Length: 271
Image (cartoon, rainbow, N blue to C red; front, side):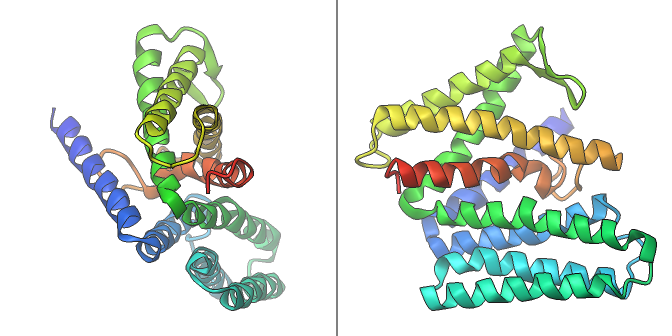
């Protein structure tokens, strides 16, 4: 009972922070995504062993990753000149990290460390930058809500009717029944956003499509983090959020949904 209360309270605080940042404006949203990025990078480095036995190169790599991810996200609230400047800054961070790999004191793991570093930018930095870009018309809020609805629907339907395993190797508890339950909740969420006039001018089919996309890519995002955790032999990415694990455990779905949703929104004129 105590764990349930703790989990519920921490979940409410997490949701409240996200909703508040989105309604406060793009600066707050970008700032929150930058904080999420910094924490997620740390957790990812911890899971993959890059925080163990910090060498000067690993420490410099961690700092460069944090700087590059922050630059990606904050570019959303900057002018075009600043965007180009930040792009060059990110490229410089990558180049410096490549050069540092030459001087890694643990030569046998130098390429492995570099590969994990590059993946952290692609896996965390770019998707969170896309998430920040979804702030326009508050579409980011819709994405978060549909992800939460997907989790709720998958859990409820899967618990009651789950029989056929979806991806047993990585997530034994996931079922096809739960997957389609989550999709149904996502589509209903999209329908609700349409009828509340959340994003004027966007058609019902567009919102239903957004629900389907959210369900599919949120599931893949969750499974991909499960792959990382199983490979690294860890249960949670961290313990920042009581009862929920680390920040990476909370945004794993967003990291897959945000880039695809941004492309979808641009092509369907949702933003």
